[in-house]
Image 1 (cartoon, rainbow, N blue to C red):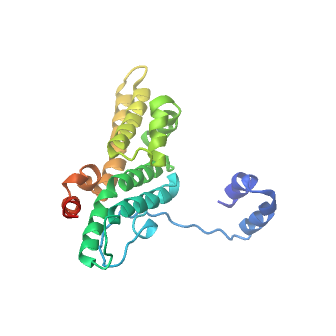
Image 2 (cartoon, helix red, strand yellow; image 1 turned 120 degrees about the vertical axis):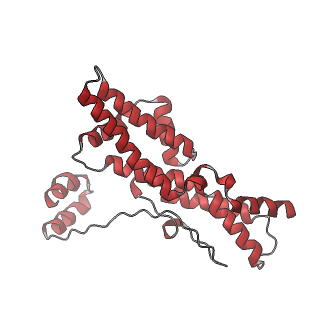
Length: 234
């Protein structure tokens, strides 16, 4: 680790900080911080609203934390805008429950993208995982809808979960196609199958943790109907 920090990281650090950085590395002052993911688990509490990493955490690889937090602010602002009396705890709690439902497609899409990208690009000795990682890099370099679509997901401009699934599976199929060409030998078929299986093992547990119904079918969640009813009453 020390060698890597001195030879690879240190040259990228500004001149004013480089000597201090190398000095600390040589003294062994190296600390690591674990990365965690934490799908949102709503616990409606009167008078309180959790936002940001305190409520919903994903891997920082894609920098999606602020995007999710700012999106949550907009969703909540639009929800409470019709309220006239903020002392009405019962009505406020009903709107708050709807907030947890309506935020889910955007937040879950960015969370799933961040956590799956981390697993894809993590170091691994598995040949299929290495092929998947390289396929991900080359997929982003294809241009057109492939690049713009992935960037729209990364930035939160396209928060549709279906688009995330499309691009993730398209990347896996792109990788399989490269493995099978020019001739699908038994070994290549086996590696291709492992690649598809590995992609599924990465993606679907993350989606399950986020909540399939909330992520893809928020209109079926009862809290949303409560919100619509409140609008009708108002």
